[in-house]
Amino acid sequence: MKADSNSKPQFQQTFQAGTQFQSLFETLLEARKLQECSTIDQKQQAESNLAAKLTAKTSLITGQLEELVCHPEYSRHVIGIRDGWTGIICRWQRGSLSPIHGHPAFTFYHVIGGLFAMDIYQRTVGKRVKPEDHRLLAAGDSFWENGKEGQYDNLIHRVWAKSGGFTLHLFSEDPAKGECFYV
Ligand SMILES: [Fe+2]
Image 1 (cartoon, protein in one colour):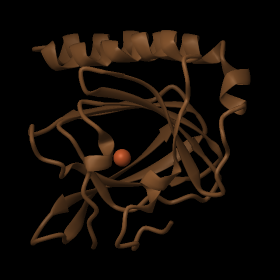
Image 2 (cartoon, rainbow, N blue to C red):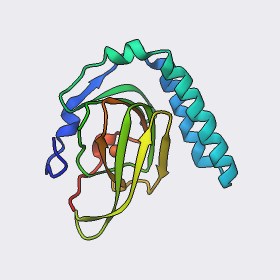
Image 3 (cartoon, rainbow, N blue to C red):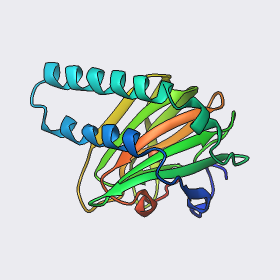
Image 4 (cartoon, rainbow, N blue to C red):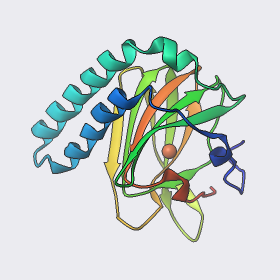
């Protein structure tokens, strides 16, 4: 799929990972606590602790990651769902580009391995967006946002895999509800 696609083909590449990532999902759920941090120091400390735990845990399961279905663009593997909170591992091929898309209220990203460029957009009129920010995310980096509940236009972005790799995600609801947008 390409960024200018009008459909949601990315969701056709979603697989159920089974129970082999249960322990990783339990740790990933700790990302929910980031919302409770009231100061920047607390937030940075919590982010750094969680990233270290996730990096340690994922370093032990590289074999299981390599066994995940490898789609020509990218594939999404659901590793757990609890009270609507959904954990996903994405396996990316070098050069893969997601559509410009939004998310439910809470979104957490952690790069397990690889290098990813993320373009962040601001909604303008209707389904149109304009560029707002750009960042590079490498192995061990985390990124999260707590947006508006009941909306699926939070953290509007596009991800471009500069290398093959794996990313880990936690969403407060089914991410398939996320809307697609256009520049
Ligand atoms: Fe996303």
